[in-house]
Picture (cartoon, rainbow, N blue to C red):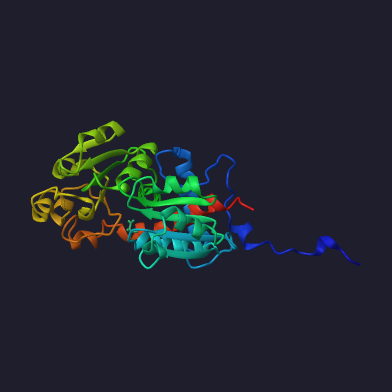
Length: 329
Ligand code: CP
């Protein structure tokens, strides 16, 4: 006799592995960390851990976002961010479109908005945009119906970089609360610094920004961070150093007499490691310039978590995509 209850219906893979999105998550876009709450940031970090494990540490492809499409819209160079957004989308089963301004119809005079709308008309669900002008993703979010993720808008914000940095620290220390994290180098031009500062402060870390006075204004104190011009003075207090690249391409004039002088005062060397806490974490958002912000021995040494940051980037971007797209029919 036919017994419907005896039929086992296979549970879709997506239902097994999808972390449920709480009703409190209301965001359509990820434009920065400034306006996220501590619990929203923690949710993204937790989802990143969950999805990293659900994809077998990145070896298994899920179908959570099957039928969705991500477009990478990059008007500046990228190695880490662009490729990890592509991989994150593919690991969740989405399709990807890759756009670079070079070789596109932008060279024929098409405007930025028309270009973005053209890409969106290819039935894209999320646009990941990198541009040298601060506020570009915010403008796109007003013009497009799809989700927008800021992959770096000039020196303003780079939210997924801030999140992956914070996740890396949390994995090593368990919690951000009470840690002292120093961002060292070109603070003035760093979107990574801004996103880290918003996220770290909300999760209870103390933040120091350190570098030459030409690259670190006293005004940073208004955000609730300590300003220092001496790496050697702050070194013994730091649990984490995040070494920022000197962004010569964003500087009208050179902010110090020579790279050699910068290196003497601010580069992380083996000798400075010996004067640090024994478990100090050395981070860098990359690209790294060996011999400028850190020596090769430090970049490749036991305190460095620079490549772990890259791996965590995929997990953070999977979590972001799931939160922005997972609830849409
Ligand atoms: N950290 C970072 O944004 O690297 P890319 O410029 O390579 O994306």
